[in-house]
Image (cartoon, rainbow, N blue to C red; front, top):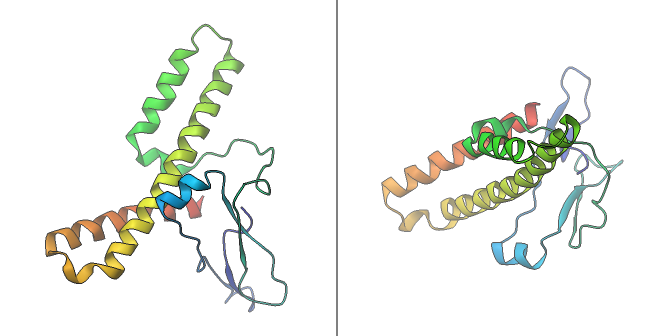
Length: 160
């Protein structure tokens, strides 16, 4: 929620820099305790960094937002299966209800998928940062490949 970027160099329009430098990270056990947690980027009018607010009960993040398609879902084969299962499972409904069912199912799947990807990024980063000396070269290469895939998905999401 909030801005996509947590750092903005406010130079002229030609040399303006916007980056997502600050992030929140949590363990799977913390996520299970705070399933509705939301991280929000706040406004900081006098700083070039935006503070992050972690709302553990998710009450600040509850809005009535419209469906937003995430282009990185197209890289996941499960996406097409979810759409087909949802569409075929509501075959007796009218077109609008079928569309709404697909949207609801895709949103639920997308939230769970994005949460899982976020957890995977945290785990891979932790292993690469702290356990790299105890890992063999094949495992390190596998982790780096996984990291690159996760970053490519983030890049797709940020460009849309």
